Image 1 (spheres, helix red, strand yellow):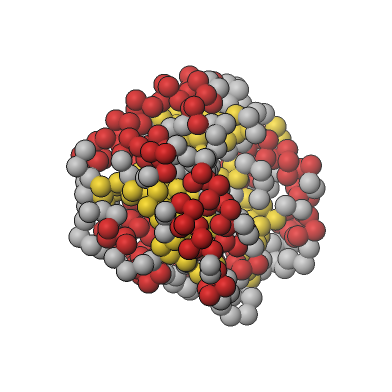
Image 2: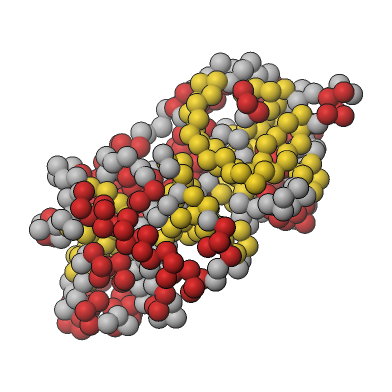
Length: 485
């Protein structure tokens, strides 16, 4: 192994590991180093398509920040939750049914050799590998089957940062407790503590950092102020009222937040469109007051039939139908498209059968084969609310089971779904206000934002550079460079 490994660990989930890892990827890349990201195991329903399959969205963005081509070795194991106690296992980009059936602890011995090989290869080919941990390295109940935190740190001999969320409270206890529960040789890998999401007067932190250093011999090397509008998609979080962009609100975009929502990161650009208020909805009451100019989006889902049943149980099906009945815009993406149709048909036990919302005269049949590919497609002429997309070429990606086609009997009766992309990728209703498509990434395409809003948003490169500038300003001078020597 020739590369230096820098690893970001967290005291909890949501401490800021993904954000900081992305920033470090761009920071080191700007030093002229050959950099790649790595996360041994990611649990997320946010995934992106790469050349040999799919990886977690966070590692995809981290690779772009590092000026590297995203690939499956950067996230060799991806767990996509389908139920509270069940995940689809994606190993080296491909779904592995046998591993998906195994329990959590049994799985680790089977996947570790693949994970170690992927990491070793990346270490041999690059100058710096920036590694992200998962959850907390002090989850002692999982230590015997650890394949993502300290086992990785020791294997790569990584210089580690331990980051905590100050905004939650108890930050010094979180840092000390996490450090104290590590083995001695693991403690020695921790080179610095990072206080993230700090609000207020930094002078009030004293004497905490020095007392912590006296206990652990580990310095606090950065205090990162709270930064809401950094522009990087949240890996698994949802938006709140800070999802209002600049200017007076002229359009509300309500995204239905069902339990197994997937690929929610693709809506990040909407946060930056002037006049748009993006909000997440879990009850009909949150849709009250929407006007015909407002949108409802049914996003992707890792369990379409189950999420559709949840939507009905909340009464959201009627609220969505009422909005569409008033001429309001409704957009379904991937699983959302499947929900908009008349029926879900599952001959292979992939997802489940059930009636759809009946807003598009189409039917989805689930296939055993999973479609995972990047895709460019041209919108055919559209009518009504979505007419401005006519003739726009978009680039995105597909991750789905199932194919969607017109409902034969309804088409014979004259209720015909309008195909508005080739190969069954997108469909529109006759009234023009309901649109469904399989293509993820619609709002990440600047041509779409220009067509729909007449707007441009910051490029990903400018976001990555902003992250690198930020940590450069707030880390102790020279410390980040010392981690790669």
